[in-house]
Image 1: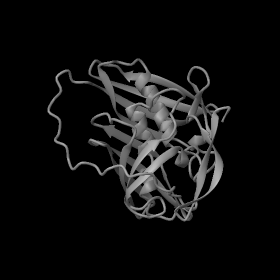
Image 2: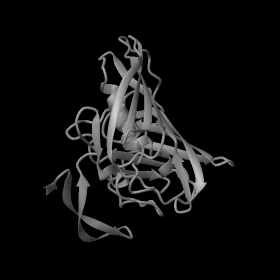
Image 3: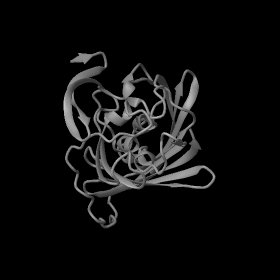
Length: 286
């Protein structure tokens, strides 16, 4: 049943790894709803784990990448790298965006997107679009093939934080590391269950940012009930565009003695490695 921008679906509640009872839950049909030129309304699917009023940084980063890719597009260039700076918590509210070309060029183009909420800048993203070689150079040989995508798994909960919103709008298939509730390096196949924008396919870079911003989440080394480990940035480099819905996120987090952390990740599709990601973390007691 559809009601506004949400669909109500019947599912099952998991308890102790076993389906126990029927339930009805609301599923947002997209992370954002267009609201006029350069404006987007954030749906509850964007909610992050730390606060019900703040977004997970994956969706707004993906939105910024969508705008970087579609501003004055060139069929001879691809969006190869995006660097996101998260200036402050992005509210689950209406966002306005402005995108500009900083450095135009035939072979390389640098663009910037700024997202605002209530007239205040909340996120900045810069991306390089690089020329697609007419005569492709020899590609690096494929490394070890990625593991197969497992079958459906019971939901893995992130103890001590909110699990609604983004975490339930993504589908998780853990391969190594155990899940959100097991500290340490982790590997998981991930795909969004809903589109970024209604009726539109998610671009390769938007998909990579949507998934890659969970590197610190799946590889956390601290108890989220006792510590914050929030990223102030997110960088993704794709040496080739991933194919298909699923991305394999392989992440590890390192914490320094001064409260600074680094989450480093690799991203693969079913054919192999497609790129890398990194997040700088501010770590503090809650």
